[in-house]
Length: 320
Image 1 (cartoon, helix red, strand yellow):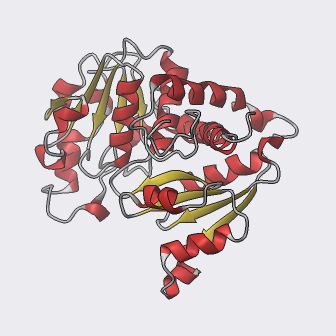
Image 2 (cartoon, one colour):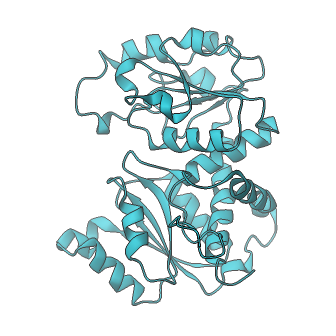
Image 3 (cartoon, rainbow, N blue to C red):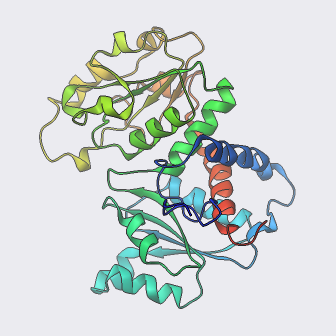
């Protein structure tokens, strides 16, 4: 039997908590299933009855717009019943423990929790303590992981570039605080890209970052040479506990992506960003809105990817 908490006894997805520990075949299965859902929004009847009768609860302990909305749309397009809890007005704000909240929701015959939390490991904790029939999807936990964002990024890269094997990908910016960066790097290496390059000031890199399977550059101009895909990261000022940067304007001067710097990468390089964008800090508006940007495509792809992941984890015991 697999020891990975995310897999059931047959090796199928039961939870989706992190990219770490999942193999290439499973990631490709998610991408292929998402492919089948692309275009569902153009159908006259958008809903697919795969999860009819299932109940999904969005537990967002952190604010979110894109992630929460795309999860809600994805669940509804699969015909599930969806409840999005307002944590600020829930019983947790009155002192109820997280486990008590989970137990009470389970008593209402919930089938899945989609969890976003500011503490790393929160989704794993819920998955470990949830009832056996309940699946958990991690919608972002602390600085640890954001696996569905990583998969929609991989989906977008495959749409635009085809095979992963020869790609050189640069992840630029606040690597230290970014759960997206960690999940993207794990997914890119699992899918077998030629190189993952991280570009950041030393103060925004984790210790021993090379052990993540990346090459490191502290110079944006040098780091963008021969790059096929550029993933820009948001400066996560809310997670910074010290003055890690002189100023935002100084950061943009050194690490902001401008039209001139984009020309250093390959001519057909694509530009990505998980959002929300700090224009004029990480990226110039002319680049964010330019012809090489696929940022809005990432948002659209979030629906198909989250449909695929929810369908896979909800069908783990039904042999569908």
